[in-house]
Length: 300
Length: 267
Figure 1: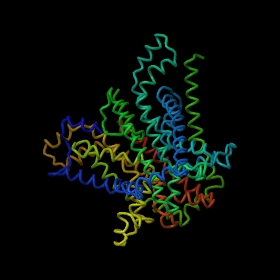
Figure 2: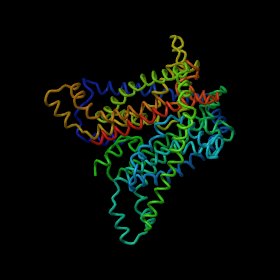
Figure 3: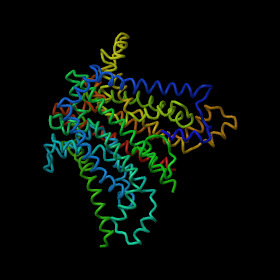
Figure 4: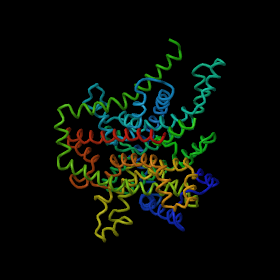
C-alpha cells in the first residue's frame, strides 16, 4: 500500500481520467462502489455481532460449539498450511529446476483449484475418497476429509508464491556453496530457503486465510457433522437456526483473522521487496497473478 | 546414480505424486463416473428444466457481475496508479478484503444488510424490490467475491507500461479519451483480459456466499453450483455429476484461457 505512495515520486502524466476534477469523481465513484458492495455489508455483520453488547458477543464466541468449531478450523488450517508449504515448495522446485515431458501441462494444472468451483472440488474428492471409493479409502465425513479438502483448495498459493522467487534466484551462489563443499541440504538450508522465505510466508498467510473461511469444498466431503463442524459451516447452521447474533459474532472472529493475515502479507511483501521489485500495488504476490511469472521471465 | 540425480528423481516423484493424488486422480475419476453409463444420463440432468434454469441464472449473473467489475477494475487501477491521493491507501486495502474473507461471511453480510430488519432491507421492500432470496442478492454476492481480480491484474501492467507513449500521443494533440482508447487500453488489454477470466471463473463457481442469500429455490434462485449441491442432497447421481462436469469443463477452459493470456502478456 505504501507502494502507491512511493510511485508518487515517479513522473505523473500519461493517461489520466479525463476532464476537470475527474480524479476526484473517479475516486468518489470507486469509494462509493466499494462502500456499497463491501464495507456496508461488513459493517452490518459487525453491528449485528455486538447487537447485545460486548457481553453478548463474548457469550456467543465462547459458547462450547463456537469454540470447538473455531478450534477445529484453526488446527486443520495449521496442518494444511504446513503440508502445503512443504509440498508447494517441492512442486515449485520441480517446476522451475527440473525438466520432464508434460511440464507445461503440470504447471497449468496447479491453478485448477482456483478455477474449479468449490462444490465440484468437494464432489471430485468424494468420488475418489468417499464411501464408494474405487481405491478403498473412505474418509468422507471425518476430520481427515476436512484436511484433504483444504489441502486441495489451498494448493496453488504456496506454489505460485515461491515459483517466481525460484525463477529469479541467482544460481551462482549455490554453485559457489557447492564448490566450497556444502552438501545439498546445507545449500538448501543456508542459501535457497532464506531466499524463498518472503514468498513462502506470503503464500502461507494467504493459504491460511483461505483455509479459515473455506466452505464449499468442505461441505459435501466432510459434511456438517458435529466432529467436522468448521467455522464456516457453524456460521451457516447458526443462520439457519435464526441465531444471527451468534453467526455474526463468529464471523467477526474470522474477519479479524482475515485482516491480520492481509496485514501480514503486506508486511512480508514490503520486507521481500527490499531487493528489487517495483511492482507496487498490494497483493502482487497473489498467486493467481500471471504477471508474477511474465515479469520475472521477461526481466532476466 | 549420483546423489543429485537421486534427489532430483525423489523430488519429482514427491511433487508429481502429491499432485496426482490430490488433483488429477479425483478429476479423472469424476469424468469417469459421469460417463460410466454413457452420455445420456448427465445430459438429461443438465437439460432438465431445473438444470437449464440454473445454467441460465448462472449466465445472467456472469453477464451482470463481470462487466461491472471490469469497468470498476480498470477505473480503480487507473486511480491507484495514475492519481496518487489521500484515499488511495484505504481503497487499496479494501480491495483485497474479498480475497481474505470467508464466502459464508460475505453471504451473511448481505443477508443482514438486505434482510427485513437490515439497514437497507425495508427501503427496498417498500420500493417493491425483492433483493434477498432473489436474483439481485445473488448478483451482489458474486460482485463482492470477484471484485479484486481485474484491479489486481491491471495495476502491475499499468505500472509497467509507463507513460511515455501516452505523453507522446497527447503531445501530438490526442485528447484524453483518444489516448485511452488508442494507447492505454491496447497496452493493458491482456492484463485486463486475464482479470476478466479470473472474475468469470469465480462468478461461475461461487457457492458459499450465494447459498446464504439465494434460498436455493429450484427453478428460481438456483445457480449451477447450488443445483449440484441440491442434486447431491437428493442422491441424484446423474444430476450432480452432469452439472459438475459442466462446471469442471468451464473451469478447464478457464485454465486454457489463462495460459493463453499469460503467453500473450509475455510477448
